[in-house]
Length: 90
Picture 1 (cartoon, rainbow, N blue to C red):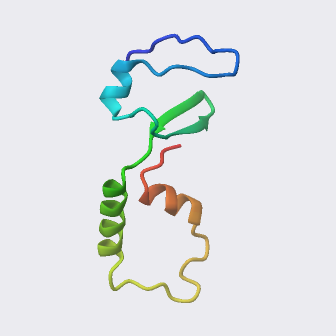
Picture 2: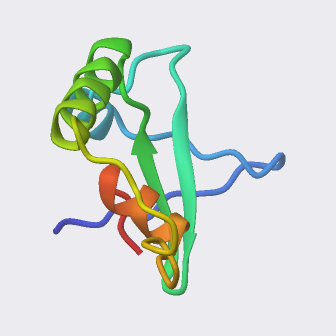
């Protein structure tokens, strides 16, 4: 993976280089997600409405007909489950 050194402006701002914005579909006025990690910050583009709907449909289809029984979720981390479903890596 190629890394580029960026200067941080007086208000803590950085400019994401055009080559990265184009490669990852980050548009002017769009939003990104910044995740803190032990080794630094990770910048991700947000999902489009269509991508989010597709993920929701896939998850719904995968869960169709499945219901939790009392005690079945004991010891299950809902945060980990959420991260797994939405592809959030630690």
